[in-house]
Image 1 (cartoon, rainbow, N blue to C red):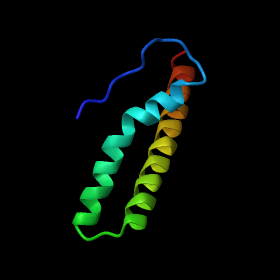
Image 2 (spheres, helix red, strand yellow; image 1 turned 120 degrees about the horizontal axis):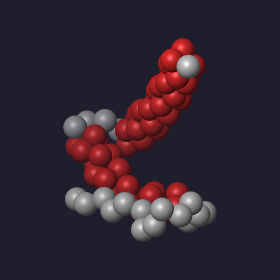
Image 3 (cartoon, rainbow, N blue to C red; image 1 turned 120 degrees about the vertical axis):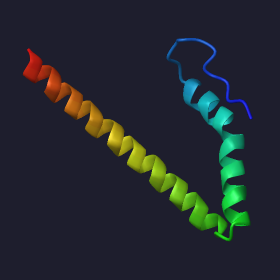
Length: 74
């Protein structure tokens, strides 16, 4: 399944909705695979949300680390 990128470099209010639309099929497929493996749909959804949250926290930590490294190099 193909996930299309943004249609332009513009930051606009529809960008989030467009991204969500592109990821919807893949997320539904992931939930379907989890339920076929025996997980309950709610468990799968909460696990995906938790993974997304952890990913955001890791991104923030990486940015703080990169900023600290930039300060040291100056």
